Length: 357
Image (cartoon, rainbow, N blue to C red; front, side, top):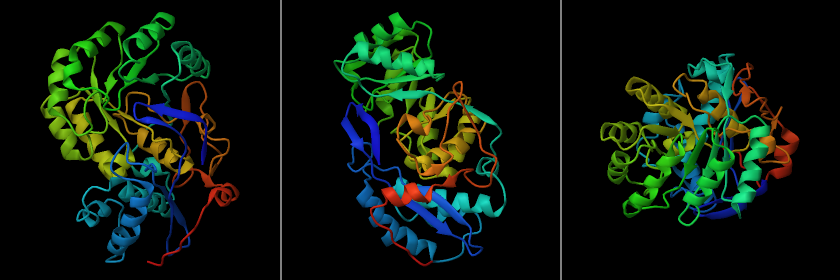
């Protein structure tokens, strides 16, 4: 699928995104749907679309064949022999959760234990060619009602950019995302961000680091949010225990599925750590899973689950995800709550493979 406009981060810019869509058909004939969020290149994690295919077909599906699945939570233990490859695991697990909820005649959010009928929505804005272009885009997003603005930063495009945004919008809820673009040597520079009353700075240091983040957090007033560093419940526990962050971004694909996402949510709730749901430029199926997850009570900060039309000319679900006054109404239909737009799916499909379990 082709994005409406290029998305730029500290790693680079891209406009096309490939997906694996997983359909699991139960004995009743009901289908559950999942979506792989991996990118074509390993810039976010080590996973790619191609490695997801390999892991799903050659390792995860054989594990599914070993015994029946009685509840989606069973998949955490079933898939445990496979190290990491969390996006591949989450793609299958999402489809199993959707199928489970549909067969229980229950919305996915209720099957997960969610409580909200509406969720607050923020927006993530990629690096822009100028501060003026960024400020214009922020204005458009605020006019559309988004309740939190996230902007990408990198060395050379950080303090001055944030200062320009704050001069124009002194009170807007604002956060910055560095995607691991800095090191601890930049701590004095990063401390300048404390002047701008930010909600948080997301993943300023290395993608696999906690120790240096703990050092940096002690030096900064701005809360650090960890993203790429958190790949499991154990990661979340360790990060919180050593003071590496004050906020955690939960991405379903990054942590291996909805069950682990719930576990991290529950642990953070006990520790008083706010969480929010990050985006991976999902198509409609992945977006619907994010909506269901965000209904859990410790998701107290607006996530990145913007409406479909923000990214795509046409999505693969019907109706598409829509945002009104900065909120998404949570669907009450069984499963993910959205129908699959088969015409759109067929239009975008490169190839299809059927595998009997």
